[in-house]
Length: 161
Image 1 (tube, rainbow, N blue to C red):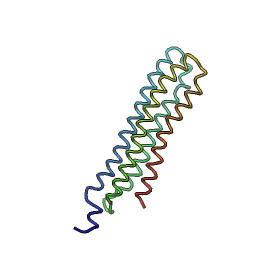
Image 2: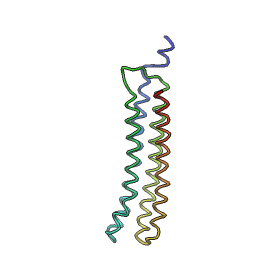
Image 3: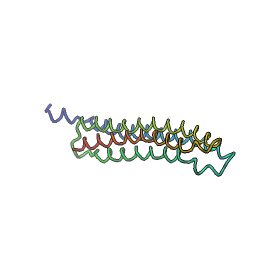
Image 4: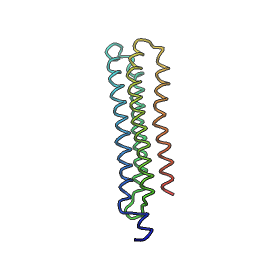
């Protein structure tokens, strides 16, 4: 067995595919949780003050962005997976790490956005002055997913060179 075959085993693309799957599974699970949990709070607010629903949709929008982060990384990784080209084990592990980075950070950010969004919009119903604080906390939760995206993009760029 030559060194070339050891560096590019037939199972190497599996790790790249796993990176695509993990990015989408975990990232979209976080987005779904954030949307569902904050949506429950928004529904509660809408019963008492329907005019506040539009301003209360910020957590839902921020949760949806987490899914976009995962989609972007998944498409970038998948575009590097070409059966006609050599795909090293190193690239496979980089793509796996990129997918896990964006996916798990999106899962954590979605959980935080859901919890803050639910409690925040309910508090906003009772006291309108908490709105700015809620938005700031949501931004800090969202940026956790952005950090995962940045790391994933760096890893993906490293694997393409």
